[in-house]
Length: 159
Image 1: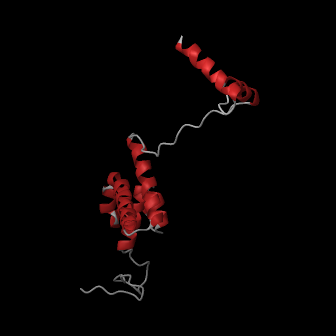
Image 2: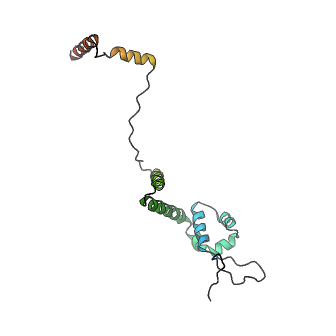
């Protein structure tokens, strides 16, 4: 029998227009939503409430999706990584940055060392007195006294 669709593209159940509540029809959109919610770790009751159906109806119509509960998180994140990667390849700068963040988060979860740009360690801040003491022990080479002090320090270091 040919399936009939309404104006929004949703299939019309067989008993539409008759007495009683119409039977729930599992659409592709709802199946994707169930996989996504399973990936987020939601319970069956919570997913059923999100779809405005009962838990038995959820188990009846979405048993294939519920059977892969353990894989759902990996499937959701895998498709998310794939979409972000495709957008990054197209040159989307925001997608490139987000993909880098996702890879770093994934590496942290796996326990891999995160590759960061090496920044030189900042030089410790010296107080006023420490700076004056350091300057007093380093000769100023622009003056004759500074040159004499440098020669004296060099000769002491050679002995």
